[in-house]
Length: 290
Image (cartoon, rainbow, N blue to C red; front, side, top):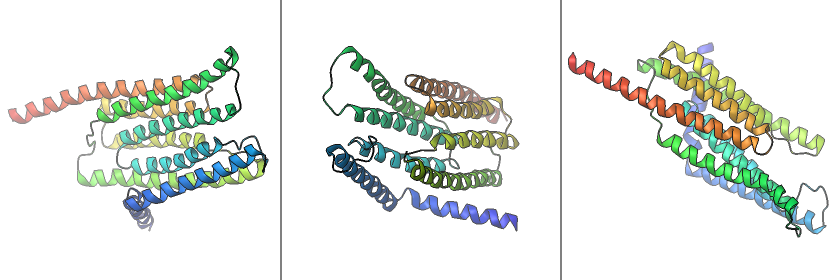
């Protein structure tokens, strides 16, 4: 009974996954993001021109922030669908999300400088956090590209049945993450209505990702106990912790933590690839010898 219930959830995930990256869904996502951008632009302009004064939050740049936040929602969903396919690719997706968060924060701060500005030292100093976020996003973009390029995927399972079981567990985790994500979204909407402030629970979601990564690490022990595999998975979980801290860190520290996480996964990837090449060479020699 319980097995059938889990199989039903896995089939639901497979159905959603098969449609997620299709052209129809991509067009729908584009239209939704564009729609929120236009709505935010209209509200910001009305508020800026004085026709509808609600809050200083609604500047014309609010439309960009709103569009980025909606885009981040779909990026997080894309991350959830990546977890069963590749832990490494899901980590890369996390860095993509962080780079978009940094860009969003930079656009958000620019909304405070729509009026005429006085180019004095104080104003230049106020621009430094924006510059930090912008260049931090570029550096994370660069690191993410290198990370994807150098990934080598090797199955840790010994049979097709084990591989299917391992992927099935990760699909179940993805289903529960999706439910949690939408639950947090409903909570954000209710809280925003009550407090008149936009609240985004992406920090809490990244906390859930940390526990998910640790669970996958511990579950993978039944398939492999090789040190370099365990260290690789552990480092990915640690990188998620750094990225979680990035979301709540002040200016400069957020970029620093993201760069530390990026350099760490690049270093681990380089060492892992080196060890993996040696293992594959030894296995090749053993086959030839036998």
